[in-house]
Amino acid sequence: MAGGSAGAPRQMAGRHFPQLDGLRALAVMCVLITHYWLQSGHLGHLGVRLFFVLSGFLITGILLEQRPAGSPAPLGPLLRSFYARRILRLFPTYYLMLATGVALNVEGVRGTSLYHATFLSNLWYARHPDWEPWTTVHLWTLAVEEQFYLVWPLVILLLPRRWLLAALVATIAGGIAFRILCNLIWPGMPPQDVLMPAMMDALALGGLIAALVHRQAGDPAARERLLQRLGGASLLCLALVGASVLIQLPYAITDFACTVPMAFLVLAARHGIPGAIGRALAWRPVRYLGRISYGLYIWHIFAWVFLIAVLPGLDWGKPGPATFVVATLVAIAMGAASWHWVEQPFNRLKHLFPYARGTAPQPAPV
Image 1 (cartoon, rainbow, N blue to C red):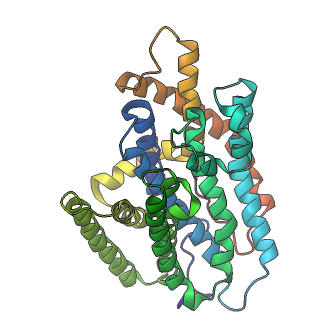
Image 2 (cartoon, rainbow, N blue to C red):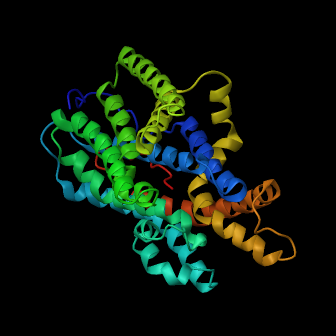
Image 3 (spheres, helix red, strand yellow):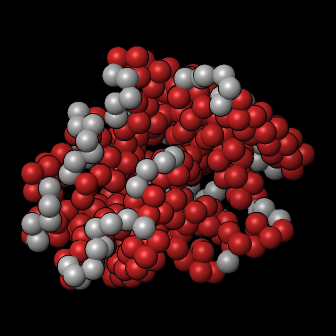
């Protein structure tokens, strides 16, 4: 990749972007609305895709910041820090949730616990189009994330810089092609949505935006051009989605077209969206929801299970606006408890595994 000199200012390390927390809140609320209220539709799927774009953007940015401009750095220390920090961020809450499900014999958890414990939930649901057990249906996204983390650092750290942008574009195209192929082989079945290669278009799109930001560090004019071009591409993609009502297009194409505006939102939020939208994303309660979004997402199905168990006389098993309001409040309480009592104490241990070039903020993945 051209650019990215050693003297360029860092774009991610040691900085926090409040409006990205707002986008995390938006993403997790799309999932909650779908699970608690709508029970169908594309909204939850779009929320998950937004999480993936965010994750690809932040993780790629962190890795690029730690990669020296000259000769390759020793991979061992960098990878140890990366994976140790990811484990501290993700594993405690995740395995506590699994242990709770097994201990309380929550429906379906014991029978599929080996898949979830090894982050292979997406393989389970790829083979079960009925999406059962419903109590762990959201864990396929965590499996995708962990599989992504295994592969992506090697891609970003080892690939020659001059090939990086082309490789990211090729990965996006490969993700779309993989989904089209899955739909041809298993029409309408889960593999096109839950396998890691099928989500690489969203993850690599976030990575592509991060790579462009990294290359254009210290050049405000280039940053503005990138925003304008991505905004124009987003409008074209939205027009394509609208045209798909009249012109039948492969689902993978329209789904990616929906994802491009998400990348524009991520880039705009990273630089700061002005006006009412920016203020809404940076509003403290919204930012707090984004901050606790990982635990909120992890526990939100158990919040519904809890309601059904403690209030059996009320039909909490039926999705709708009342279920959404009450279950969301319970899920937020569980997510907040997770954040303050589990996630933060482990996050404080990250100083034991510093990056050689400074400590970078970590995303809150799904």
